[in-house]
Length: 453
Image (cartoon, rainbow, N blue to C red; front, side):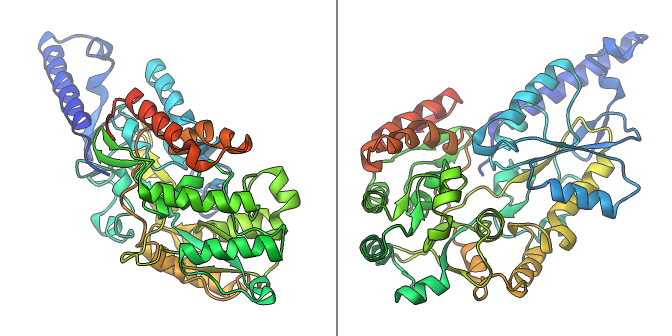
């Protein structure tokens, strides 16, 4: 992520104002700290931010339902730490719940969690300006630890060289497929998008009802359009974005999807919908999707039996020189500047992102912390669930196309509001590309972005 200069300037200005205010209060020898700008004299500048007075007490951690297991495991392994675990939606599909609550807490002066997980990778685009996210590389998390995260993993957390969050997992997309079914049907795993489309058309004719993909989820563009190098979401600066949804790259992938949707070998139900789970989960022949599909979707949600699901590199367009894939989520952990338990919060956020006990052995997704990722892969390959090793996830983790950014606006929310309704009405993705463009532009501009098209 690129540096947000406005954020840095604002933070410096705020620090200067506090400094002047504090000096004035000392000179006047006032009796109460509240006269000095809301208790500024009771803060301690340390680790790159003004820390509030530290206290003993329960550490409040917000997690989504998937990361609840992480918080519970930490509590089990650290019985001396008091933990107040709160579950929320994790900002799924760009709900902005966290931002809304922080705005409320900032107004009331209380309520902030010590540590929070978000399924989104764009939280620092507002959390820094809101003085919520604490800097982590100014003394809290050692440089040695930060250096062991996968290359580029924490770019979405970095503003002006300062890390304000830690990446939980990498959600690089690969091609999941049912190995026994592919063998039974006499098909070969496609390596190009052209082969993928041809196979999808063939499946529609020879094995109607079986699927080679799904286009019904809000994160659909992050799988297909991102992998196809569609320039719909190129963050070019702190508050600038390039949007072009009708380029050849976007149109080509949209046309492929339209063909398979029409042939009914690509669903528009959404993999987590009741309809998909009841009528289509056992009809998946292939499914492009993120690394967490293996455990969370096929094993956890679909209950697909062991020794069926395998992983291959996501297809590339013929003649493509540099392999590319998309990314669906991954999530980040943030530590609050308002925490009264910074030491305990730092221990938690470090453990939850780097520990083999969770990331290596329990987490459903591919860890962003490289040593834990090695353990995770060994665990997955030795589990007996997959039909062969899934080491292709490691290669894919370095192939996420950098031309798709993490702006303050949610692409998932935009797609869900603009494109998904059109699909259910029978419209083609190609026909909806201009509306998608218009919606992205409006969302971006409403969040203060300068848009180039």
